[in-house]
Image (cartoon, rainbow, N blue to C red; front, top):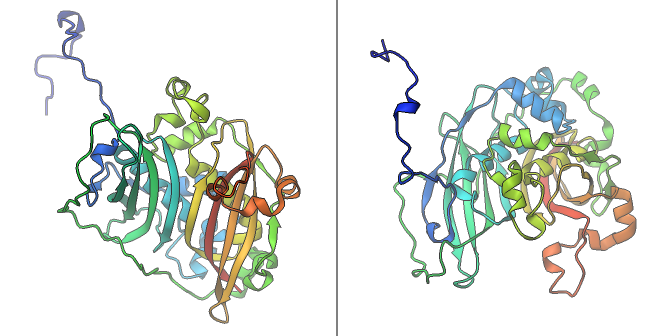
Length: 385
């Protein structure tokens, strides 16, 4: 096919500049656009690649061989190497940024994150979101939007689903209409009580040699606190990882944009919170999840302070519950705490019990927030006994 019959020649000098016809594209949505009940299918999607999955797992310090060693994964019944669950969360969230949060002021929290089935190299993920709720806080104030999002594989099976809240600015100060819900024509297979589908296969005795005994279910005791020994200094690598995960919010990679912001979110580009979460999970991996068969889910996750390139983060875990389910595995719930610019041990020595109290509750209790604390979340895992 000849695509350019007249020849391919430079023509810009022959076309007059018309300053009356200028486009200024803008992405993301304002509070007025978030109508409860509205369902949006997000653009692009992504096909998982084995090299990308391994790059992610090693960059974010994964210690569980389930996500590093294909032979190990197959011994446990998986079809091949499964993507780390938090990679699936990060991709789903990032695919939704263009529609959901590119105008957002802040991500307020993650709720009821569920990982429902494995995803492998060659699987293609697409993402959708439903507006669950919109809270108007006044005509001159940003509002709070609750979103339910999910990722589907090429077989239209839900791989991950979660809810989150975002703080969203208004387009104008005009009074908004009453909160009537809209009906969507798009099917949105978000389950209130979802079922997790996992291959609970046989593991050869030799597989046990690839993990330590210190992170098996029976070694954990409710109430104990684990001070993870090392930190991780974040460099400007976070800029490229935001792009690799397809997060389009300019706050994470555009210095002119971030410098124009006000308050503690201004200055250098902020590290995308999903990357902070991934590094914190990696820092805990040898002590908490090396013998995990799967992440059941996350709940009550909050970024309590922004993180910037050059800062060093650390992690602590507090065991909340240990529930043996069979002779071979059980479920453990831990509280994950992230800190910056202080070692995890020093943070525990300095703040003690206060480190584990929710930052969002401290103002009402007359308690000062912890400046070095950057993250808090509950995490449930399926762990080998």
